[in-house]
Image 1 (cartoon, one colour):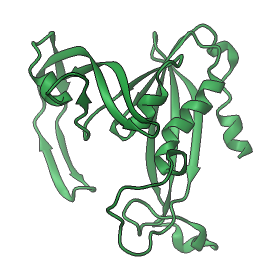
Image 2: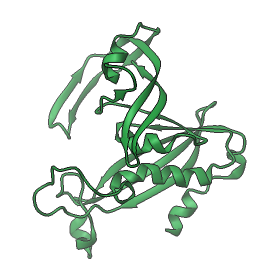
Image 3: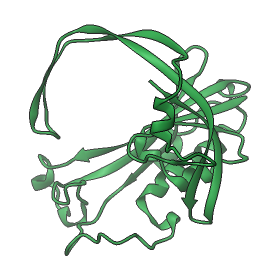
Image 4: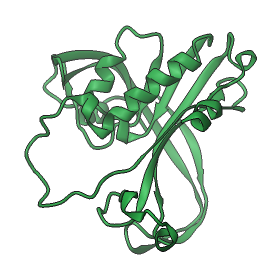
Length: 231
């Protein structure tokens, strides 16, 4: 705990008055190759497959929004996920949000806000794992912003028969840009197959509009105003 505390102590001179990007994500660290050398292996958790020995890491990398330079970590969390015994429950999880593993996203924001209190403005950039109704709701009225990739949940819109993805798909194109894609030739371990792609330049279209999401959060139905963008 003391080591993690010192790792996340950014110098105040690097924070005061700056616009910051805070990039957060979770990763699984496999200990499969080392587990036979660990004397108390029974204390080691498992990864998402419920069998591979390892632990979870969730961190926040702080960048200067103007220069893109990395300034350090504002939070770093480690935990073990215990082996799940018996069949997986398909019913809705009745636990409170702060009791769930997904609360790590909000907990890391809370920790980072303490460390980065002297910043001018803060934008948290998260992948689709952070597309959580409770996280969107908790950000309302706070002095930070969220940029989250919405991939799995097609959200309901206020006063609109269309859901979010269909609504964005019908918008007029607001702009274009070119995105270079490098050649790809590797084996995807998670999908168990080869991935091959020729190098090319993709012509990207951008659509965006202000929307209000209707989300079922822990405190009930909430309305979340934001800008939605499709590439």
